[in-house]
Image (cartoon, rainbow, N blue to C red):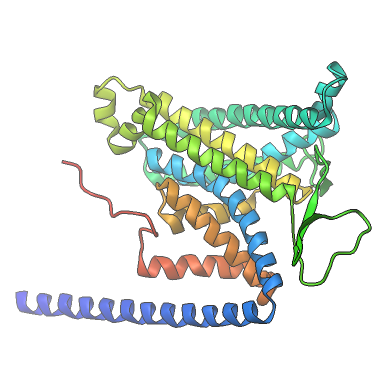
Length: 374
């Protein structure tokens, strides 16, 4: 009997190794094919290729802002917070009302008429972002206390289903006419968009009505703001986690919650703080996304939220650098697919990349296998 069992186990292992080898071979062939397509297009039209890369960077940096919240919450609570994408949506809608109804983005010009216009834009836009962050922080902490905290010791599937339920509630409650409305709403930007083009003789600002030379590469102040904000958030969060007391408490709670409690750490407060920080980043991402793509609706957070979650898993969920790298990969995959294959295929290709990478490395690019605690 023992020999029969051993032979069956050996056969299963050989079969699993054979399937893994087939998956890796398929992945290598796919990567070579994609590389061939990209190189051909780069040679044929370098300007268009670079333009698609810029589009991918803009998407990737926004996804990185959302993915950071996913990876933070999972790292401490081991919960996939599917409502995180809808917090992103609430941040976009909050900024919309602050701009279109309250006119918060121009308050410095009203109270201080002598301020330079550029300073009015900075202070006004910063105020809109700050208030949107505070609203989303309050929402996320409320969700955590009401929906997730009572299930802290329940099976993970219970918390996961609750997260999906909270996500649907935010989407469909927000679609009511007395809340956000189910319609697509044009978004009023808090500042003017300035666009430049790069040609053979340098960088030039595009004047409205002016035609630009062929094979030029264009970019706007929006992508510069998105990139700067995302990099700043990444740096500040790394400092928070590595150099502050709350960061040490977050790492301790992530590693072993009972021991962290014995050491005097208020784990519940740390978890609430984690949700709050993640929501603040999601709100910032929502505002920047709405500025970049100025049309919002209550289903806004579904696809960006899912893609940010995929980015976090792709990079290694629980890893901050992994979330950033995974988001950039997702952004590039989406932009290059839309540019060279088909726009409807961009979502399918992005999720296919996740499947292929996880077949080869289930923990993601930067993820490490879980170690047993002593």
